Amino acid sequence: MNFIFTEIKRAFADQKNPINKYIAINAFVFIGLLISATFYFLGDIPNPFKLWILHNFSLTANWKVFLFRPWTFFSYAFIHEKLFHLIFNMMVFHWFGNLLIEYLGKRRMLFNFWAGVFAGGLLFNIAFDGSQLIGASAGIMALVFACATLLPDYQIVLAIFGPVRLKYLAGIYLLIDLASMMGSNAGGSLAHIAGAAVGFISIKQLQAGNDWSRIVDPIDHFLKSIWNRKSNLKVVHQNQHATSANSKHSQAEIDAVLDKISKSGYESLSKSEKEILFKASKP
Image 1 (cartoon, one colour):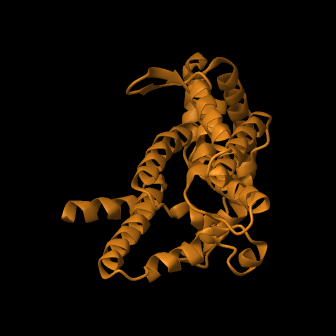
Image 2 (image 1 turned 120 degrees about the horizontal axis):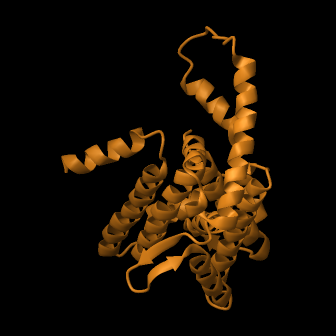
């Protein structure tokens, strides 16, 4: 038991990789719902905890509801009712989230995930009325398609099928969701497709020199200024101008490396180009 709590504390203390935090939060919410469901099932009475969670944190396709609970455009991604749904989503999140962090860094991974969550919720809200949406699948689809767009020929080994290139795996995901549009989870499938579109377009824009993830910089700087406000002294470096110029130059080099990956794959990079990408992935 102490080992479990130690690992949880380590996950929340890791500032470089937030994936374990998100997985832990999703697991806590699921366990809470599971325990409450068991308790109230034995008592044969309605489950007020589950009703409260769904009422306040799931995304309801109704703009009047959204005006009073705007956070639900993001909080719905932390709720899973079925064990297989939770396990599958968290496994894919772990694989593709870490892959994107390795090549593009934490900020771009988080941007793709949350932009996918928001886009999925937005399209769901436009297309449906009164239905509820839960699960992180829209954000995870954004990660899958971001990786497949950045590294289309990158191979992962699946237990049954063996090595599969990311572009084919993403295509299969998309076909499944398109086919599911006729089923009972049409709203969820539509949200997945919105997330996939975000991941694809985001990487294409990055390769064209437009880093959409920079829109979160002001928020990130604001939060850091709050949490790290330990001194009122401001240190001004004499080489500030030179550092700024070097950063711009480095961004141009990064864009060139990303363009080469999209055309020829990661294996075509030279040692110096891999070094540029490695340094850029650090927050």
